[in-house]
View 1: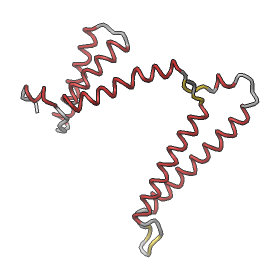
View 2 (view 1 turned 180 degrees about the horizontal axis):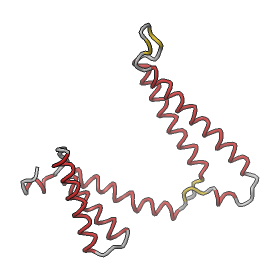
View 3 (view 1 turned 90 degrees about the vertical axis):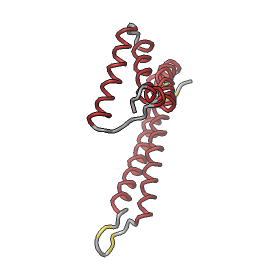
View 4 (view 1 turned 45 degrees about the horizontal axis):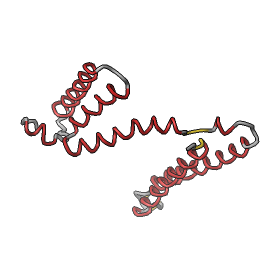
Length: 168
Protein backbone atom coordinates (compact mmCIF):
# COMPACT_ATOMS: atom_id res chain seq x y z
CA UNK A 1 0.00 0.00 0.00
CA UNK A 2 1.42 3.34 -1.05
CA UNK A 3 -0.32 6.69 -0.70
CA UNK A 4 1.16 9.64 -2.55
CA UNK A 5 1.81 13.02 -1.00
CA UNK A 6 -0.41 14.72 -3.57
CA UNK A 7 -3.31 12.39 -2.70
CA UNK A 8 -2.94 13.32 0.97
CA UNK A 9 -2.71 17.04 0.09
CA UNK A 10 -5.98 16.81 -1.83
CA UNK A 11 -7.66 14.77 0.94
CA UNK A 12 -6.56 17.28 3.60
CA UNK A 13 -7.76 20.17 1.44
CA UNK A 14 -11.15 18.48 1.05
CA UNK A 15 -11.41 18.05 4.82
CA UNK A 16 -10.53 21.70 5.49
CA UNK A 17 -12.98 22.78 2.78
CA UNK A 18 -15.68 20.74 4.52
CA UNK A 19 -14.81 22.46 7.82
CA UNK A 20 -15.09 25.83 6.04
CA UNK A 21 -18.46 24.82 4.63
CA UNK A 22 -19.71 23.84 8.10
CA UNK A 23 -18.52 27.21 9.46
CA UNK A 24 -20.34 29.01 6.64
CA UNK A 25 -23.51 27.01 7.21
CA UNK A 26 -23.44 27.70 10.95
CA UNK A 27 -22.94 31.38 10.24
CA UNK A 28 -26.01 31.47 8.01
CA UNK A 29 -28.09 30.19 10.92
CA UNK A 30 -27.08 33.28 12.91
CA UNK A 31 -27.36 35.77 10.08
CA UNK A 32 -24.34 36.87 8.12
CA UNK A 33 -25.45 40.14 6.57
CA UNK A 34 -24.71 43.70 7.57
CA UNK A 35 -27.71 44.78 9.62
CA UNK A 36 -28.87 48.27 10.64
CA UNK A 37 -26.73 48.13 13.79
CA UNK A 38 -23.68 46.56 12.15
CA UNK A 39 -22.64 43.02 11.35
CA UNK A 40 -24.93 40.19 12.39
CA UNK A 41 -23.45 37.43 14.60
CA UNK A 42 -22.51 35.17 11.69
CA UNK A 43 -20.88 37.89 9.56
CA UNK A 44 -17.22 37.28 10.45
CA UNK A 45 -17.49 33.48 10.82
CA UNK A 46 -19.11 33.29 7.38
CA UNK A 47 -16.25 35.08 5.69
CA UNK A 48 -13.66 33.12 7.67
CA UNK A 49 -15.34 29.95 6.40
CA UNK A 50 -15.22 31.34 2.87
CA UNK A 51 -11.47 32.00 3.26
CA UNK A 52 -10.96 28.43 4.49
CA UNK A 53 -12.81 27.09 1.43
CA UNK A 54 -10.85 29.39 -0.89
CA UNK A 55 -7.53 28.34 0.65
CA UNK A 56 -8.51 24.68 0.34
CA UNK A 57 -9.43 25.16 -3.32
CA UNK A 58 -6.07 26.87 -3.87
CA UNK A 59 -4.30 23.91 -2.31
CA UNK A 60 -6.14 21.49 -4.58
CA UNK A 61 -5.30 23.52 -7.70
CA UNK A 62 -1.65 23.89 -6.65
CA UNK A 63 -1.39 20.15 -5.94
CA UNK A 64 -2.93 19.21 -9.30
CA UNK A 65 -0.59 21.57 -11.15
CA UNK A 66 2.42 20.19 -9.26
CA UNK A 67 1.29 16.61 -9.93
CA UNK A 68 0.93 17.29 -13.67
CA UNK A 69 4.34 19.00 -13.83
CA UNK A 70 5.97 16.18 -11.86
CA UNK A 71 4.38 13.55 -14.06
CA UNK A 72 7.11 14.20 -16.59
CA UNK A 73 9.94 13.67 -14.10
CA UNK A 74 11.32 10.13 -14.00
CA UNK A 75 11.31 8.37 -10.64
CA UNK A 76 9.01 10.95 -9.05
CA UNK A 77 6.65 8.32 -7.63
CA UNK A 78 9.18 7.36 -4.95
CA UNK A 79 9.85 10.98 -4.00
CA UNK A 80 6.09 11.67 -3.85
CA UNK A 81 5.42 8.79 -1.42
CA UNK A 82 3.56 9.91 1.69
CA UNK A 83 2.69 6.61 3.32
CA UNK A 84 4.07 3.17 2.56
CA UNK A 85 3.69 -0.12 4.40
CA UNK A 86 6.52 0.50 6.86
CA UNK A 87 5.29 3.98 7.80
CA UNK A 88 1.75 2.67 8.15
CA UNK A 89 2.94 -0.03 10.58
CA UNK A 90 4.72 2.63 12.65
CA UNK A 91 1.59 4.78 12.78
CA UNK A 92 -0.59 1.83 13.75
CA UNK A 93 1.92 0.82 16.45
CA UNK A 94 1.36 4.17 18.16
CA UNK A 95 -2.30 4.71 17.23
CA UNK A 96 -3.70 1.45 18.59
CA UNK A 97 -2.23 1.99 22.09
CA UNK A 98 -3.85 5.45 22.14
CA UNK A 99 -7.19 3.88 21.29
CA UNK A 100 -6.59 1.33 24.04
CA UNK A 101 -5.76 4.17 26.46
CA UNK A 102 -9.08 5.86 25.68
CA UNK A 103 -10.97 2.59 26.22
CA UNK A 104 -9.14 1.83 29.48
CA UNK A 105 -9.63 5.42 30.66
CA UNK A 106 -13.37 5.23 30.05
CA UNK A 107 -13.52 1.97 32.00
CA UNK A 108 -10.92 2.37 34.78
CA UNK A 109 -10.32 6.12 34.84
CA UNK A 110 -7.99 8.57 33.15
CA UNK A 111 -5.10 8.21 35.57
CA UNK A 112 -4.92 4.42 35.16
CA UNK A 113 -5.19 4.70 31.37
CA UNK A 114 -2.56 7.46 31.27
CA UNK A 115 -0.15 5.49 33.44
CA UNK A 116 -0.52 2.33 31.37
CA UNK A 117 -0.03 4.26 28.12
CA UNK A 118 3.10 6.06 29.34
CA UNK A 119 4.51 2.77 30.60
CA UNK A 120 3.77 1.08 27.26
CA UNK A 121 5.24 3.95 25.24
CA UNK A 122 8.45 3.97 27.22
CA UNK A 123 8.93 0.25 27.86
CA UNK A 124 7.60 -1.41 24.72
CA UNK A 125 7.72 1.25 22.00
CA UNK A 126 10.88 3.13 23.05
CA UNK A 127 12.68 0.16 24.65
CA UNK A 128 13.50 1.70 28.04
CA UNK A 129 14.07 -0.59 31.03
CA UNK A 130 11.11 -1.54 33.20
CA UNK A 131 11.92 0.42 36.36
CA UNK A 132 12.58 3.79 34.67
CA UNK A 133 9.44 3.30 32.55
CA UNK A 134 7.36 2.55 35.63
CA UNK A 135 8.78 5.50 37.57
CA UNK A 136 8.17 7.86 34.65
CA UNK A 137 4.57 6.64 34.30
CA UNK A 138 3.95 7.14 38.02
CA UNK A 139 5.55 10.60 37.89
CA UNK A 140 3.37 11.67 34.93
CA UNK A 141 0.23 10.45 36.70
CA UNK A 142 1.22 12.18 39.97
CA UNK A 143 2.07 15.48 38.27
CA UNK A 144 -1.21 15.44 36.33
CA UNK A 145 -3.13 14.61 39.50
CA UNK A 146 -1.59 17.56 41.37
CA UNK A 147 -2.06 19.96 38.47
CA UNK A 148 -5.66 19.09 37.67
CA UNK A 149 -7.10 17.96 40.99
CA UNK A 150 -5.26 20.26 43.40
CA UNK A 151 -4.12 23.37 41.52
CA UNK A 152 -6.88 23.79 38.92
CA UNK A 153 -9.49 21.92 41.01
CA UNK A 154 -10.74 20.16 37.88
CA UNK A 155 -11.66 16.58 38.72
CA UNK A 156 -10.79 14.08 36.02
CA UNK A 157 -12.38 10.67 35.53
CA UNK A 158 -11.12 8.44 38.36
CA UNK A 159 -12.79 5.11 37.73
CA UNK A 160 -13.57 2.33 40.20
CA UNK A 161 -9.99 1.58 41.29
CA UNK A 162 -9.15 5.06 42.58
CA UNK A 163 -12.63 5.41 44.07
CA UNK A 164 -12.04 2.16 45.98
CA UNK A 165 -8.99 3.83 47.56
CA UNK A 166 -11.11 6.86 48.50
CA UNK A 167 -9.62 9.12 45.79
CA UNK A 168 -12.56 10.82 44.11
